Structure formats: structure tokens, C-alpha cells
Length: 127
Image 1 (cartoon, rainbow, N blue to C red):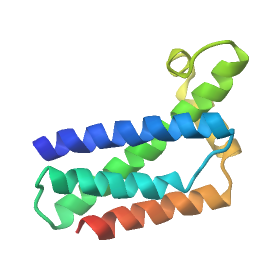
Image 2 (tube, one colour; image 1 turned 90 degrees about the horizontal axis):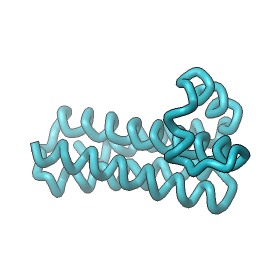
Image 3 (cartoon, rainbow, N blue to C red; image 1 turned 90 degrees about the vertical axis):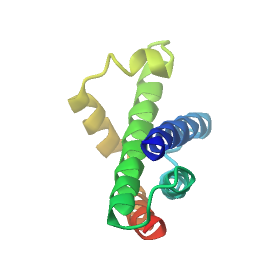
Image 4 (cartoon, one colour; image 1 turned 120 degrees about the vertical axis):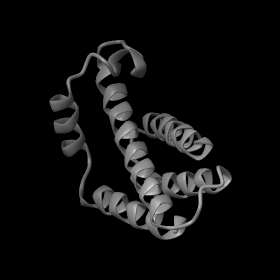
């Protein structure tokens, strides 16, 4: 159980850092998905989760969660900026379809490649 709590904490923390960096630089920064994968892997190891496929699956899910939360926050920050709202104020005012559409429009093949690489890195590094 402590490993899963650390996994959630790691996913939320790296997603928040990713959002702040992306909004400050006005870029998507897809390469931070790999950093998220390594962070999630470290959190699972610090939580002393046994090596194997369950830990690899948790790492992949934690990385996917970090990617989704970061992109949600980036979209909310960019849309909220035009409405004079902070990212966390606009996060819950946007519908999932709108967030999905803007995420697909804002990210290109390079970011999708980084996300895919991050998921593979999470699975391999945590096994």
C-alpha cells in the first residue's frame, strides 16, 4: 500500500512540475514524460514494491496518469490564461471532450513519440 501512495504522489508531483515548466516556456515539453516514467519507477522502488509484472504495470499506469494530468493542466492553463483564471480554477470548468480535442491539437507526433517511449521506459525500468 505505501508503494501505491508513493506512486500517486509521484505522478501528481511530476505532473505539477511539468505543467509549471510548460506554461512558463509556452511549449508542451513532451520529453518530460520520460522524466515522469523514471520518477514513477523510483517511487515504486522506494515503496518497496516487489519487482515483476505488477510493478511494471503500476509504473505504466502511473506514467500514463502523469501524462494525462500534465496535459490536462497545460490545456487548462492555456485556456484559463485568456479568461484570467489560474490553471486549477479552469481545470474543472473544461469538459473532457474539449480537453481531449485541445490536447490532440497542441501535441504533435514528437510528443506522442515521447509519451510512447515513456511508457516503454516505465515498464522496462520498473521490472
